[in-house]
Image 1 (cartoon, rainbow, N blue to C red):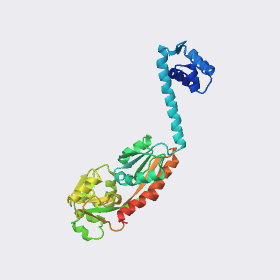
Image 2: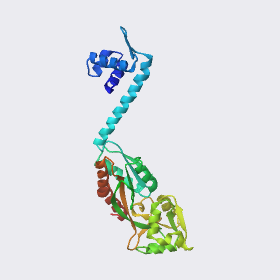
Image 3: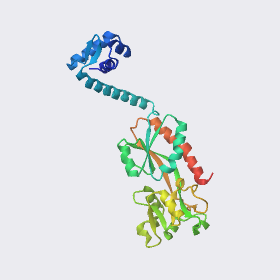
Image 4: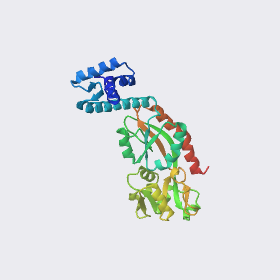
Length: 309
């Protein structure tokens, strides 16, 4: 049994005529007839009834021809996938990003990548680092954008850009009188933070140890939110202050008089954002293009946005 013979019987079933089926398959009619007869002999069944009025499928042939269609479709899909591997920009690239990066990176990344390579489409996933790690290992994602350090066996990691942390304040907060905020000062105010499970929360506590529960000792209140946008709204409502990565600290969605930002004093807390992918991932050119676009186009735009340039 060969794929060619399967194509023959599908063509005969569609055309109801051996001559037209042979022309469709670009072979002579005797060649097609021999191929169909060989398959019938191998299967031990008669697939077609030949008469002066035409060619008809036998009852057993209907199920076998449908199965042949499915097999040929899978083969064509297999070849298409192979072609996509040969051209790394044809298949969608499945990218994941943590919640505190994706909403601020993707709006700039998607049009920049489309401009750089119009053929490549992206599948986007936002989640916690642990979930993205699992999806990357299982092959459900091709690459993930996370805060470094990130280590995983059989994975490559490339730093993309570093961004400082900023303090987000109500516009009438007393700290707005200062040009910069020492991290230890956060111990004396109501601080809004992400809940457990967000790596950015851990990075903020590392930068400002006084924010850990064990260090509070009743000095101010740490209120937890589910997202950076929730924290931003809470600050705008006058419920406290928060720490945001610079890419998320924009004020453009608020009228003047609600929010403002202040940098930290030196050394400024920051995080490095990186890309991780499986070492054996075959579409290296797609990964290299993604790194190039983020590093050379997206990161400078994020920097300009946070500095007001």
